[in-house]
Image (tube, rainbow, N blue to C red):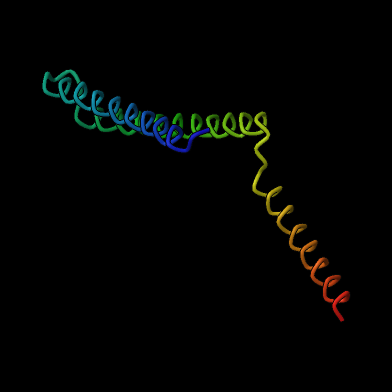
Length: 106
């Protein structure tokens, strides 16, 4: 999956969260101005909302990462650990080949 697309999707999520928080702040400010909500209640409400949004965003990010891993696995893209193992094996084979070449030229 294109790294730029992933960044764009993450930015959309962050933007949405920010938009919800801004709108909620407007609503609570209006309720305080109208006297329908105490300023302390508004602060607690906003804090609770922000905590819930952070929790939800973390859950969404975790789910998103899991889905990306699944798609990459389905496409046959190797994981970093597999690539590291293959690099190690390749290094060992190159070393063995050099050793054999050195023995032949002696």
